[in-house]
Length: 249
Ligand SMILES: O=C(CO)COP(=O)(O)O
Image 1 (cartoon, helix red, strand yellow):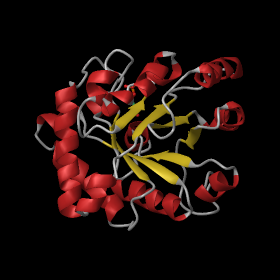
Image 2 (cartoon, helix red, strand yellow):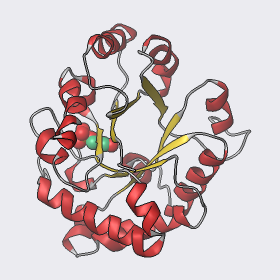
Image 3 (cartoon, helix red, strand yellow):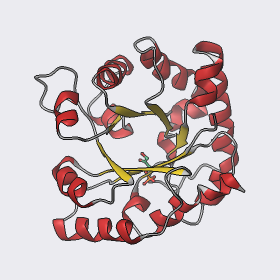
């Protein structure tokens, strides 16, 4: 089965309710390819999660941006499920860096969230230092192995490759660099998890994609969509969603 294009928006910072409503109304009014062509998920900060959920069009979905392991956790998957929040983003670069989340901790969270019925966007990616020392693939492998060891069903998991060095910086990766990493990553999945999982799991790209660059990235055969930061709060997010049609052409 072909991998459906996936566009995630990770709203970087909290906005006033007025601004949130404006972003949502831009999304709600947009004409975008149908749900069979592209799946759209937006991840506002927690404080706006219920507001966005209540206003957002029904063909787009919302994601929480983190949850913990265990029913008694401050924000548990169980709680998100009760709130009818279908997705969670885990392993965000900032959480790995600032909150010192280990690979194992992210793996535990992913496994627990999936077991409770959430769909998960799991972020992986290397720092500039790791890239320059030639360890990109070994970092992606270690981060993904910590997840793979704890799950058996990959249906509800999307992998987001976020090269840390290309997030919110001027060090933009080229589409060819993104393709190379996605290709190697899929190959690793095939050899270490299984050919079927490698063929069906969406690997989306997150590294300063915007309305001007999205088409070229979308053309890359192993890029199955995007996890977008800053541009996801701007009207150009619509162009990024529409870049799904590149795959169809
Ligand atoms: O953080 C990102 C994806 O998760 C990307 O952020 P930017 O698109 O702002 O670089």
